Amino acid sequence: MKTYTYIDNSNLFIEGRRVSAVDKGMAPNIYDAMNHRILDFDWEISYRDLHDFLCGQNRSEIGGAKLWGSPPPGDTFWNHVERQGFEKTVFDKNFQGKEKKVDVAIAHAITKDAYTVVDKDNDEIALVAGDKDFEPVVSDLVSEGYKVQVVFWDHAAKELRDAASEFLSLNQYLSVIGKYKNS
Image 1 (cartoon, rainbow, N blue to C red):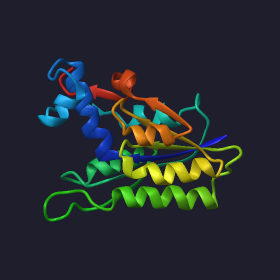
Image 2: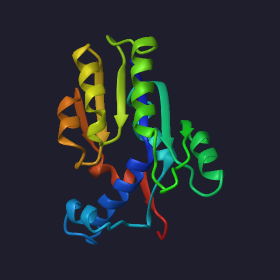
Image 3: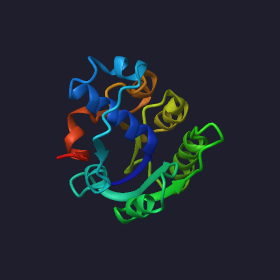
């Protein structure tokens, strides 16, 4: 079995910082952290550990590990991500500083790969995102017989979790896929 992994980097990163803030007691719950924009700026994703966790030998053979996002200052970040085993796609933010195109690009890549390279009888698609915008794609692929696992924090959209073949919460793996700058 191969696993084809698709990651919304900004969504994973920002929401991970919110989960870490709740874990550290900076907010009483995730909804308070979202409403008051509370983030733990000391928590960062370890892309090597994320890759090992999502695509490691214990899971299956890697069909693909693709990651989308917007560029932070400097090119070294995306070069690092690529060295950790991810195929990257980077989109510039719009004039308001908002990330655009990422969800559509991920949905397009999942759909294209599903119908061209994924063996629906033997392979798995892993979507690392929590937006309900992905629900139609996930629902469609599951109804077509594909195994689609959604991997995200506990507060992923209920519609997306329900549409998936399986949901894996990252909350219990906060320290496995992340690290703290000041530790």
